[in-house]
Amino acid sequence: MPAANFRLLLVTDRTQTGGRSLPTLIREAVNAGLPAIQLRERDLPTGELLPLLQEIQLILTPRAVPLIVNDRVDLMMALDLDGVHLRSDSLPTYPVRTLIGPRRLVGISTHSVDEVQRANQSGADYVVFGPIFDTPSKRSFGPPLGLRLLTEVCRRSSIPVFAIGGITCERVQDVRRAGAHGVAVIGALLTRDDIGAAVREFIHALQA
Image 1 (spheres, rainbow, N blue to C red):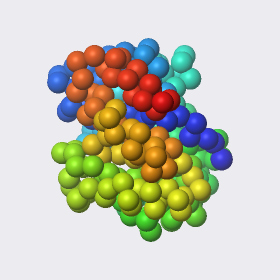
Image 2 (image 1 turned 180 degrees about the vertical axis):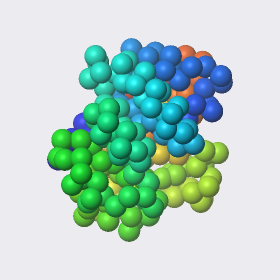
Image 3 (image 1 turned 90 degrees about the horizontal axis):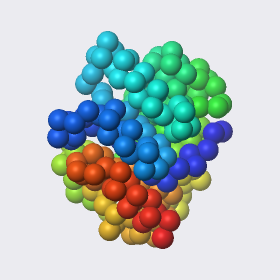
C-alpha cells in the first residue's frame, strides 16, 4: 500500500478563506512546506470542481505534493490524482481499491472506534478521526470525541490516524501524545492572514 508519509494535511473549505482565492492560498502554503492536500469542496458541481482540481494540480505536481480529492473516484482517475478520501458513509473501500489500484492513497473519515477498525480491515491507507475538539465546521458530526477516545483508536489502528476538529498548534503535542500520526487542519490554516507562517508553525509543532 502507498504510505501516508506526511503529518500535516490541509483539508480545504473555500468558505473559510475570507474571499481569497483557494489556489493562491494553496500555492503559498505549499511554498512554505505544506506536504499534502485534501480537496473537500463537496458542494461544487463537476463543471466547477474539475477546473479547480486541474489548477491546484498544476501547483502541486512540480513539488510532488499529494492531491487527494473527496469521494470523486471518477475525477481522481481522470486526472491521475494521488488519492481519494471517502466519507464513512460513502463508497466501500474494497471496490474503490480494486478500481484505483495499489499505488494511490485511500483515506477514510471516521467518528468511532468501530469505523476505524473497519477502515483498518478494508484496505485503507489512513483514517482521519474526529472531531477531537469543538469546532464550528465539525458540529454536524456530533460532540467532540476527545483525547481519551483518540488514544484508544490510535492504540487499535495499524494504519496512520490523523486527528481533526479544533486542531491548533498548541494542541498538536496533545494529539501526538495520544498516538496520532498527524493532524488534518481546516480553519487554523485557511483563516490565517499569513497561511505560509501558519504552515511553518504547524510543521515545527509536529517536529517537536
